[in-house]
Amino acid sequence: MKIWEEYTMPEAVAEELCVKFRNIDEIQGFAKAVNQFDGDVDLKQGRITIDAKSLLGICSMNIEEEMELQVFNGDAEELKELIKKFLV
Image: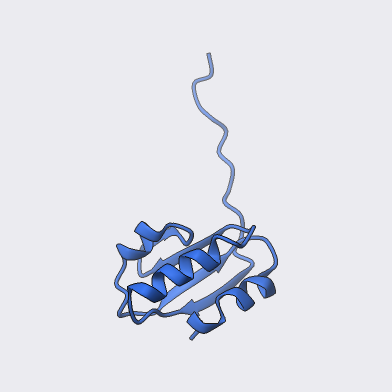
């Protein structure tokens, strides 16, 4: 019987981008665009970090403030093209 699972360090952030939304329609558009991206991405605001592909997670954050998009893998240039209208 295994007593503990081996811990693996999370991947390093490959690129960080700043995004901002004005309304719920933009959040929906962002979530749809990010879900087309094959890599792993998180949104961070203060101490809160959520999966950037989670519409519910994004809605739980303060949309009046900028958020930091952390790209862990995949083609960051492709992602930038998908979300260019949300970049600050």
